[in-house]
Length: 148
Image 1 (cartoon, rainbow, N blue to C red):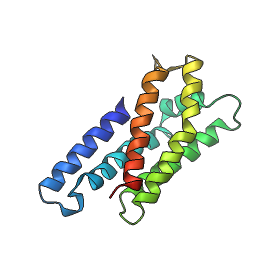
Image 2 (spheres, rainbow, N blue to C red):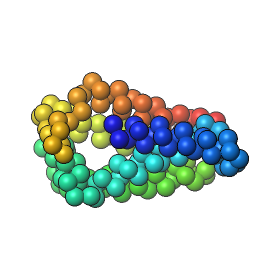
Image 3 (cartoon, one colour):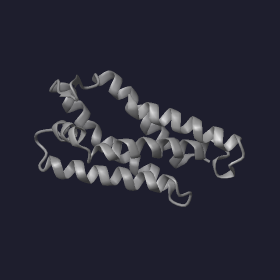
Image 4 (cartoon, rainbow, N blue to C red):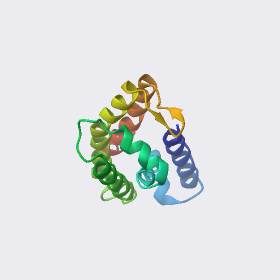
């Protein structure tokens, strides 16, 4: 739920900043870029932080080799993508790349739900709810990539 909150709050605050006169944030498209970037900073940092990292490693489907390396690589890609979203010249490509990354990582969510993992002392997000969230996140990335 924290990624959704980061996306919504980051977008809303950026849009308010645009309305308050910050021209670089004047419009929904730049505000969405900021919100999605904030979301990916939050999730990207989790790939390197203690128990969150261990939880993400546990989510990697068992048939994939090097789960710790995969978590590191995806964390780096998320952070680089977040930075790319904030640069107008690279934002569309960054959003497209992050959308593809989310699609590539979704099987880990399916695997974790099917294995009924407990992360940070709580069961993983149920697959139905996780799928809806993923659709929202991928749609946001697509909106940035193909938007105005």
